[in-house]
Image (cartoon, rainbow, N blue to C red; front, side, top):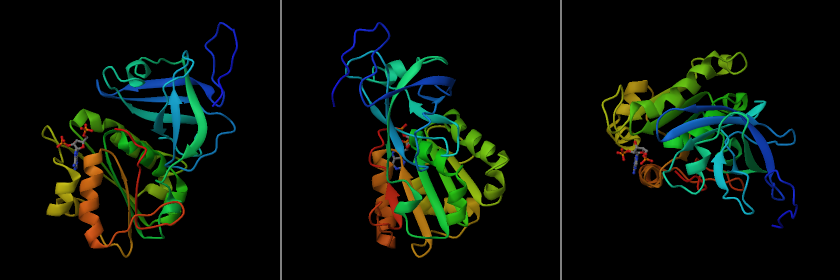
Length: 269
Ligand code: A2P
C-alpha cells in the first residue's frame, strides 16, 4: 500500500485509511474497555464482521483486527478492546478520549455472519473475553431473529466485573425500541466467571460437558440438525469447543460453503 507523502502538521492519514472521531470511552477493568467512534457514511458491513483499526501519527501505523460490536443499523461504531501492557496498539489505544481520532480501514470482513451458517432454529454464540464483541453486534441485529427462533449468547471471563459489557449489552438490547420486541423471550444470556465465585462459575466447555449450561437455561442439549454455533474468543476455548462439537456432527462453515458452526480466526484475544 502506498503512503501519502505530505508535509502538513496534522498527523498524516495513510492512504486507504479513514480518520474517525472517538465519541465515548468506558473502562470496565484494567484489562477491558469499550469505545465508540463516528461511522464513515460509506461504511457498510454485516453484523459480526471486523475492520482493522489503529492510531494516527505514524507513517506505518500498527493496525489490528477489531470486531464491530455495534449493529449495522447504528449511526456510530462500537468496539470492545483488551488492554495489553506494552501492547503495540492497545498500550496507547487504552488512553483515547472523546475527541481523539482513530484510524480505520473501511473493508469489513469476517466469518461470524449469518450467511456462513446453514438455516437453523437455535443460534449459539459462545465467547470469552473480548470475543463477545461480534455477538454484541449480532444480537442487536433484527435479521438474526428473522433467521433463528432462539439466540443463546455466552460470555466467559476470569472475573465478574469483566462480564459487565455483556450484561449491559443484553439488557439494552432487550430494552431497545427497535430490536427489543424481536429479542424479548428469544435472546438468552449466560455469563460465567472462572477465577472467582459468581452466579455461574466455570469454563463454558466444562459447563456444556456437565450439562449445567443447558439445565441452567432450561433448554435441550446441542443438536447439529437444527442448532448453529458461532465461536469467538481464546484459542484454547475454540480448540476445546471444536473437540466437543465436531464428534457430535457439527461441520465448520465459511462464506462460500455455509456449515453448522463458524469460528473467527482473525480474532486476537
Ligand atoms: P480460565 O480462567 O480457566 O483460564 P483470558 O482472559 O485468558 O483470555 O481468558 C478468558 C476466559 O477464557 C477465561 O475465563 C478462561 O478461563 C477461559 N478459557 C481459557 N482457555 C479456555 C479453554 N481452553 N476452554 C474454555 N475456556 C477457556
